[in-house]
Image (cartoon, rainbow, N blue to C red; front, side):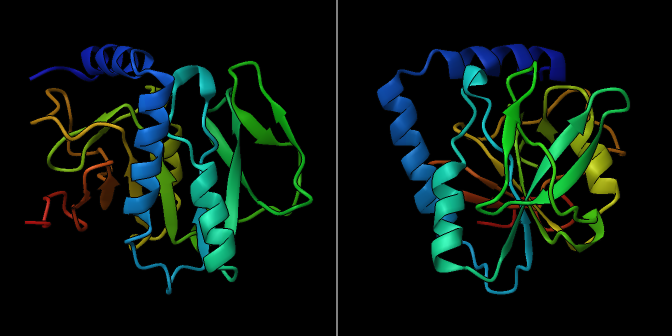
Length: 199
């Protein structure tokens, strides 16, 4: 088993080694898998915008799909506060103005703020995840703090180019697990307790 630090380095490298063609193909497969998820009961969907220099999965095709086929879903994006590792959340619409912060993250300048308590579906960025739904992020804890403010039944759906690893060595009981993870190959369902129930 490897630690989060080791996995962070390994999967950053794996993403950087993807060719542009492979990345485009994987993003297309992610979209096809995402389209299998039932969204009829979703009201507020939080989406992350990809950091291109980190080769994150491209969420723009997913955003466009939701806008076209589920126009009643309110899309939400966040602005990060690096002084306390918190996030503010804003409605994403045609009036949203973005700026790229010093870490290369596109963020809304301002807008209509949304409380985490109403968000019922979160697309979660990650570097790796394990077979029980534990994730490896960038290590700052933004999303763990965000999850703590959301309802227990909020869906936490990871997006990954790669399938899960066995287990993360230094996970702990305070980690908030994913409820689902989408890879180009399939969707993993972890429920609320972190065991894949897809099989």
